[in-house]
Length: 467
Image (tube, rainbow, N blue to C red; front, side):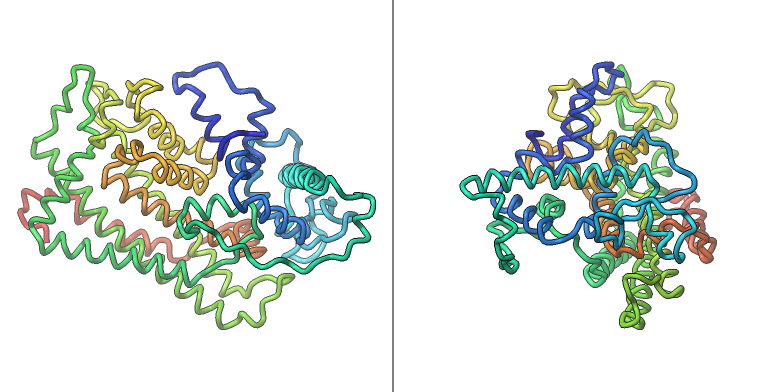
């Protein structure tokens, strides 16, 4: 059994960024990716194993199929080729004869077709669940070692025990993420999501007003943005880019700062409107919704739209971090910019810090977060949770995160949580995510952002009138 929490990230840290050909044992790597929550560090915690036994022992596997599918989807892909004519049926199947059965793609109604998995993905879910149940049965045999196991079928089933009261706070991202794999999957909490998005929209509005009305705040924010410009990363002679300090440099900084302020306001206001409309439409027809039927078209449209907007908005903090994280004052010592590089990015910078340096673990996790390939492999939400855990538990690591980087990471964590929350709205989330998306108001949405971009593309300092 893996020794540490999220062993797939522990495996990642052991792989050098300099094309190290030494790879971890493939069997252990598979264990780390498919069953990361079966590890010693988490299971020896006070209640995790008890919650795990209770949830899996009292509910059939189909209740966990979507969560286990997500877990399997970030592992290494199965070698099994997709069977063109068939899909695997897991959702709603509560008999050993039908659970995991292959059915023709066109069998059943539209909803049933959308809820079925490709055979390769379904096999991974079955593999994950087989290992989980085998592990828990072995635990039970050890716990009940003094009982005659052949007589267990005669024992009367007891009612569910009262909910365990945690001894530690459970409302932090780290605590919730640690407990989530062991309990019954949560349900969508739109009201909580609405509160989080509304608070962020209000913050964006206050920030935009402060930039317009408070010269001191404007100067402080601009200084912070300048410190996170990729041109601040030193070259091999320990010198910043020749553009630093020139009018063109400050023009770029001001443009980025103002564009971020207004585009963030537009983004989060648009997401807030979508959350409100999704909630309103859902409330109007909640009494008509059944697990076996699809959502009304108007409701599904707003949830699909919200899901798309969250994905689009998440791209902005990712772009900001790609440019600003390696340039941040605590981290830039570990990177080297090519002297001829006129547009330095995370991918073009050379890593100078050693594997034993204070910033190594931080840069590895952020590189994982900002790499599309690694993000697809590990999952955005899992990577965000792992970084948050690192910052909570290691003060030396958190000292390497500037307030600017922390702000962008906070936005990303919020949007990642929104995406995760929408993923809890099963089985309907799976249905709308399998459909092709044609967003009728996307041109309007992006035209607003384009207007902001055109406005901020002017030479702000030369105009001397940022308002």
